[in-house]
Amino acid sequence: MAIGVYGAAARAVLLLAVAAVLVPGLGVRGGAAQQQLSERFYDGSCPGVHRVVRRVLKEAHRADPRIYASLTRLHFHDCFVQGCDGSILLDNSSSIVSEKYAKPNNNSARGYPVVDDVKAALEKACPGVVSCADILAIAAKVSVELSGGPRWRVQLGRRDGTTANITGANSLLPSPRNNLTTLQRKFAAVGLDDTDLVALSGAHTFGRAQCQFVTDRLYNFSKTGKPDPTLDGGYQALLAASCPRRGGNKTALNDLDPTTPDAFDKNYFTNLEANRGFLRSDQELFSTPGAPTAAIVDRFASSEKAFFRSFAASMIKMGNAKPLTGGQGEVRQNCRKVNGS
Image (cartoon, rainbow, N blue to C red; front, side):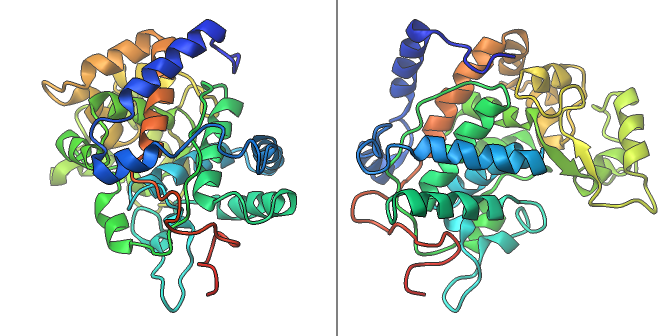
């Protein structure tokens, strides 16, 4: 699949569409701050920023085929907790309780050493300029592009936060076991609507997930002692072989998309239509009775162009959730710790 799916005219239309969705629902602070973000923010201070990030990520991918999906997920998990401020990258310290050990992140979120490598390369190229929060946004963009997904002009100029919020990470991040109503509430909290929910969930078109996140669907759905009735029988048998009821490895990895697990494409949505969504939170988008998201799943399943367009717009919209800009926060010298600590 070609990475550059849009011509110049289509890209112009996409950018206009993106601009139209940025403002609603983000609140006063987010609305004011996002106006200070710009796709050209580093043109003068670090013009090679995208090239540096791309080079480091391509090197990392040669050793770790999962890294593109993992880095994209890090950006999601950062933005859902006190905005896109790089807080997920902070280690424990005398003043920080790290979000890395929140239940949705612990032994699951990954890619931190690659972020360190990107930061080191950028500090060599343009010291003290590029924030860790922006590194996550650029890394997600580059990861999607290199996996065959859409291109977009990522808005930049975020500053790094000086606090972490493990309580928020435990309560605000979407869970693989959330029902549709809970997912809608959590996305709405960061200014994202049903289309954003479905489009951004489409990032599960690549990457892996552990058995522990599907065993309840296989053997004890909603404490019934039975499998999730929405699971396709053949897919259920496939997952049961990988994740047995007893004696299995709960951290064993499974493809989120069993058809094209490393490509960013629309197959996630065709899988949902066939009742082959790996996570409950995935299948809820299509199988919940009366779900307003089901029609969006159908639309993206029938048109990869529509999915790519919406995904790009939603990524920009999410990336503008309450950013720190101007004199707020700092540009960390080390993404794992607050300056001076």
